[in-house]
Structure formats: C-alpha cells, structure tokens
Image 1 (cartoon, rainbow, N blue to C red):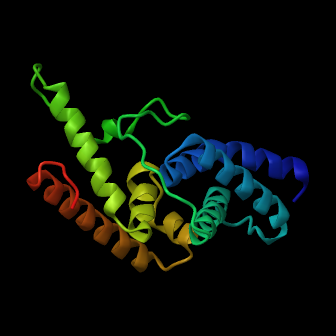
Image 2 (image 1 turned 90 degrees about the vertical axis):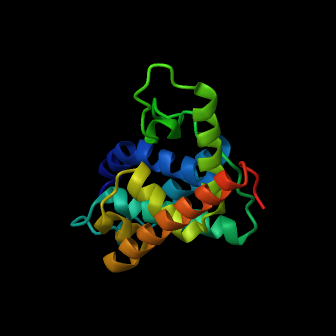
Length: 182
C-alpha cells in the first residue's frame, strides 16, 4: 500500500479513532496522544494490514493496545462529564439517556442521572467498559469489536452483556446510596 492511500485511510478513520480514544482516556490531551501514537504505530506496521478487512477495526485495535500499554505503565485514567460533548461530535453522553416526555422535565434530575451514570461507568472494569463503549457509543458491530479486541465474537457478546449488567448494577447501587460511591 502506498503512503498516499494509507494517509487517506487514516484521514477517513481519524474521527472514529479520536472519539474512541477520548471515551477511553476521558480528556482531550490524552486522546490526542493516543491517536498520534496509534497513527505512528499503524504507519510503522502498514505492511501488516490485511486489506480484506475494515481499516477502522485494525486502527481501533492498535489504539486499544496503545491505551492498554499506557494503563500498564500506570497511566492515570480521568473521568469525563457525561454531558460534555465529544470534541469531534456534536453530541454528548447525555444524548444516550432516554428523553423525558414531560415538558416540565427537571434539568437537575437529568444532570444527577448523568453524574450517576458516569460514576457507574468509572466503576466498570476496563475490559467490559471498552466493549460497551465500542458497541453502544461508537456503534461498532460485534465482529468489528472482535477484531479490535482480538477475541472471538462470542467473547465480545459476553463482555458487552456483562458490561451492561455491571453498569446497571453500579448505577442502581449508586442511586440507592444517593450518588455516593462506597
């Protein structure tokens, strides 16, 4: 693959890579660093790319591995506000919550729900959190997530199911305790 073709693929996948990095790391600077390192590694290993497979999945797998490498080196994870918009998207995590159909919806209650959801997500182990974020936020198929995580599709299904259960349990536990983490 020539450099121009590779650069075009990187440009097409850039926003998706940045969004995933931002959701994993929780802040713009770490997301930029993750994406930059991922692009460098992808370029370095461009010969290993199998053109019969989606480029996005290959790149997100590299990004995921770069993130895990950073975590292993004691990279401090940070939280991100659920109602903060992703710098690449016009929507935030708040848009994932169901809309209240009453016109007099209480904004404070919505913010509290978002805060609880973020706290609950922070308590979900990274293995499950990454699968849920890739599926429910990034919209990747199970097959694409399997390629990113380098695991069988059945494992992806299991991680997403378990991640959603853990997220729900953590959310409900926080809700019972009035939003206070134990």
